[in-house]
Length: 615
Image 1 (cartoon, rainbow, N blue to C red):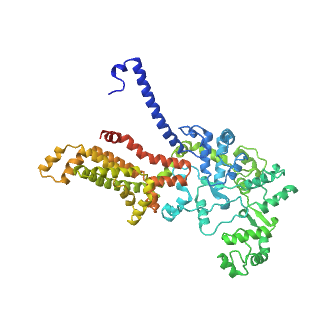
Image 2 (image 1 turned 30 degrees about the vertical axis):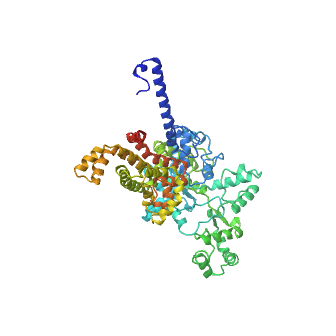
């Protein structure tokens, strides 16, 4: 019977009531859809736009957010202070703190002639292709053919060695730390793997570390102590400045802060200091001779013992000895400082010939080669302008690709869930209908008590059965098997109760006629009961499928082998080890199946609601 009759619907009051009902239903639908849309938007979220509550990503129309999100992902493996220095700013050390970034860094570049901008970009990329590898780091810019994860060192190692990416799942790259004066490469092959990966990167994916950035950072620390240093920030001196105060500061910088990885010894000084080097090894490192050197370091005597190396050795042990000796025994005057800015200035001089030609090509007005700066902002601005549409699409979908890759390739969660669902369907369709049929057909004296006993198990929290359930599975030797997730829930009390009630409503005359024709119980069950009960069986089947799909705690308890984890457990793992955006993408992916079930199985769901109330 309708809530509002057809006659009342024609009146003003009836129309108002009808409008109010539909309005409330619409608001209820919006209140359900909005959280899902918000979660969908959060799949693109990171620390830069996490405060937004818009259901559409703001970076689609906000250039400042777009640039900061892109560059934050691009320079995730580079120290923020290095990037900020090359952008010639002291306002931030990370793109999450860069306010009005587009206005300050990119808007001025829009006024540069196109040809000059392209020349700056080409000069930087050509320099990055041939620069000293000691100054190189990764800046994986957007590539329409491959995402960041596909070009990262783990994927490169797996591809080059012909192994699965899971082999390097827990591989930690040896990234150089140029904030430390005495940083040295670690032992083993990890450092060389990092170097080989860096060297195979295209020029667009290379970041040239700045020597000037380390100098400016040191000056900033001195400025906090009250010393005036603003006049010395503009260029990096590879030799002692003429100003006495600047010279004292520079010598302290070289001795205490500038990375030894970027320092070399004067060849003549290295030769003259060799006896002192061998004496220091005997005194401080307990290396009295060449045999002890080879035994303790694993390097040959010619590789650093017979002559003091002019550059930091590649062996970790000998590199640490070399650093300790240089710090305490080699004066600053006998060291040679390597500078990426100086190398870039030499590169520009060789390419353009004169300062006038360089100034014309770059559309600038320099007074000398020492004013050469890395045009990192120009490179990024040009790259964003050329790939804007592709980058925005990548920002919207990158986290979903990470999740699908994790679910499909790293552990096979989709395959595991499919197997668990199939096994659950097979056991549920076998045990529950048979149990319900036996209780319905054979009127035993204790049938009602059996039903009450079954339903009583639903009153107990699942946590109560965890320990006994685990002990039972362990004693049956089912741990680390899919049967441990399927068999404990094969017999479902509610499904048996629901099926029995439906079986009771079937006409008994059908069974009597079949018995007269000579049919047995198996025939009655398969030819009469099951065909007539398909609606309610579909309801129980739907419940079984959704339960098997959402298995979480049993998988954690019974499956020690993480490669057998289903989707629900894998989603939890992704949320624990990944960023918020990746975690939200994982939740959206996991909710697709329940959403499809709700959309296409509404009639079955309604049967599950209506039929129990009719019994």
